[in-house]
Image (cartoon, rainbow, N blue to C red; front, side, top):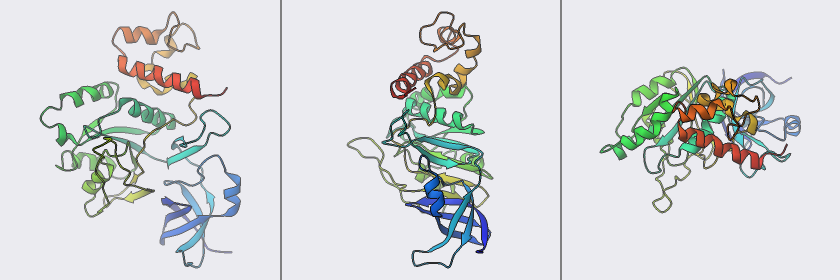
Amino acid sequence: MSEQLRGLVIRTQSGFFTVQTPEGPIVCQLRGKLKEKYQETDLVAIGDRVVLEKLPVQADHVGGVIVKVEPRERVLSRVAPRSAVGTSAEREQVIIANPEQAIFVLAAAQPAPRPRMLDRMLVAAEKAEIPEICLCVNKMDLVADDPSETYATLAVYERIGYPVLYVSATRGQNIEELRARLIGKISVFTGPSGVGKTSLLNAIEPGLGRRVSKVSHATQKGRHTTRYSELIPLKEGGYVADTPGIRSLSPWDVEPDELDAYYIEIARYVPDCKFPDCTHTHEPGCAVRAAVERGEISYSRYDSYLRLREALEEEYVY
């Protein structure tokens, strides 16, 4: 029997998986039986703990085959792009398995913040029950003369309990505080393309030399720099996941009727609604709408909830 090792998947690319083991990193492929067993999700993702069998290193540098994937504690995922939401064709795309922290990165400018996109990412993180969630606003140097609009946009999230870091990769602003949040944890860095995730990683861990790309002046949209998912080890302990930029996100396995549970400031009022199946759109005795009217729930987040619920209603097949 071949020697077996346990390890952590630190990179995935085109069917090849790099696993960090006690003997160092080993490039692996999946055992055929595992491929056949799972068709609707990513069987192996960065952050997975796996068992592999060592092989003689081949010409393509493959030195092992993954024979078992350990049960996941949690998973941050979305509906795979070009996959039909709410239908039998819906497929899960795993962003990272077993994350201990999610840091959602956006930019103060170039590209401008997209709160509704951020809300979708937060729904996915709350669904995954990730223990720590933090927002990171990069490129504060671009609004240094008047950051008031940026602060106003993010104040909504700070009030409901999400910590927000205002940073600049180019100027080093608050990079030490960001680095301190990463030590000893498996964290995922994710967000729209062009917000400077890779530049931040280079600032956090000098010497990485990861390739960066500028935002398109024509579209003001980011260009994908990261082409694959990778867990980057930090010198002071822990890993940070660098993932390809997200252009769109449909939270995985979220039904319209359960969406209110993942807007944390809305969830607290749901038990006080008159009807247990309240949609918070029109029903009498709705505690959520009453809280919005009193200013206890921001209208922008309530409107975000309504729009996402409507989108899920249109997409979901009961």
